[in-house]
Image 1 (cartoon, rainbow, N blue to C red):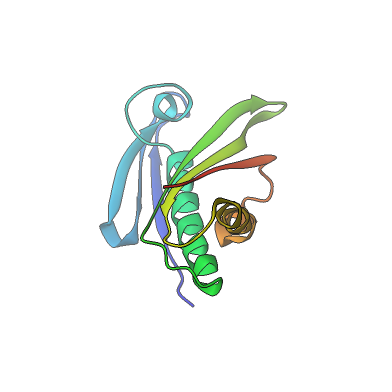
Image 2 (image 1 turned 45 degrees about the horizontal axis):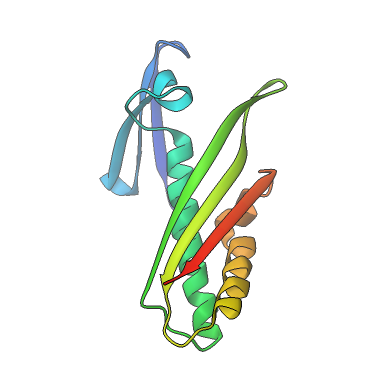
Length: 142
């Protein structure tokens, strides 16, 4: 299987410093800082990249699970909201909210919701994030 790489460079102190994150041989490069991560300043955060990874992994896992069940999705669109909060001793990712909308010919809502929950519980990124106390899913069949 493939090995994927990412890189981060941080310059300066925690609060005043700035950094750059990149991955995929240059497919993404973005600046980040304390204000862009923990406040509302422009820029990126590691949690956004984690959310993108989770949304992408979930969408692919759902597609595979649907295929195994005999359905071919036309479109799956997933977003992730990653909550980072102050906790005793520092900060932690406390919740991830996945939200997906899908167009899947011939599937009923109950089957879709069951298969979507299976994808949420079993995609590799969900497994890697097992320490997150709460991962929720809102699924909508279009």
